[in-house]
Amino acid sequence: MTDENIRPRALVIAPAFFGYEKDIVAEFERQGYATTFIDERPSTSTVALAALRVRKGLIGRLINKYYRRKWSTLASSGFEIVLVVKGEATPRWFLENLRKSNAGAHFVFYSYDALANLSSCETILDCFDELLSFDRDDVAARPDFDYLPLFYTKEFELPADGTPIRPRRYRLSFVGTLHTERYAFAKRLFVGRTGVFGFFYSQARWYFAVSKYITREHISVPWADVSFQKLDRERVADIFRNSVAVLDMPRRGQAGLTMRTFEVLASGAVLVTTNAAITSEPFFDPAWVVVVPSDLDDVKSNDLQASLDAIAIPPGPPPAFDRYSLESWVRAIVTAPRAGKGGS
Image (cartoon, rainbow, N blue to C red; front, side):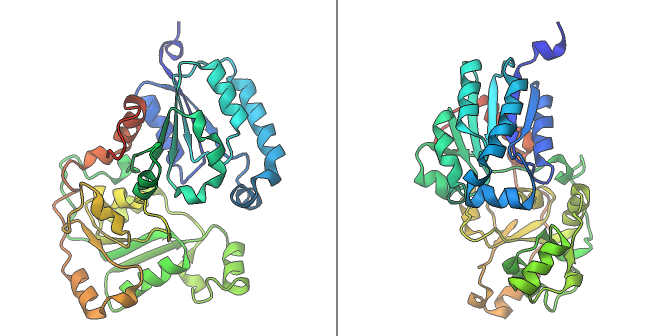
């Protein structure tokens, strides 16, 4: 009998999101699970992704064909845990078939987006034993959901001795996908400051051109400020470890803490964020987290600049911050079903 036959099996169904899905699978494997991965979406084309959000029925045939092909390879598999992340495309019939052929499996749903943005997943939620969200507001509004925040990966951990880098190249930095509000926010805080670093990513030159010249969403964003190549995670981690503070601005309507939240704090930098929901977290401390309003017109410029100037390099991550590692995140999913509403 091979090791693969002895180990418990896990099925992870998740969209590809900046390689984090690969890290999740690797961590399941590290924790002893023979793990099968399925990309939750049948296509990553711009048209298909838009259809998933706006009118899922437009690509219904594509979805069913894709999942029928996947089912043909899984029908005889015996899974102990099935994790579905977001569930925008996963059809109900597929989950029902999985349940019938894996009667003892624990089915877990996880969302790293506000549920208001995932209306298409509502029809499958009753297929799961456990519903988890990164958004405390959604958990408060939905008694069937429990809270599980996101995580950081090993690239963002400090060296083994835990010593932060001193001195640091950047006083203030931002790394993220280009959104008009984020760009304006970062540039506003960068003005008049030295030692700043900004990286704004757009998925394609044609996409940025449309948003700049046709929809005019990014009319004020210069081409020179935009990158069409992603930074690898090691480079992002290096930027954070060499920053006194890092900016974070989630999308409007999203109370869940971004992945950046945990990556910045794990790297030993101070987080400057517009997400006031972070004040409810057990690790919140003004020495590590500075909360500012997304509308900077609500803040006196001098007061804000003074608060940024006063930021000091912390002695490392907040206490007991390893509870937000990917290792802890996977362990929470596989060992703590129905851990209790509102837990952290």
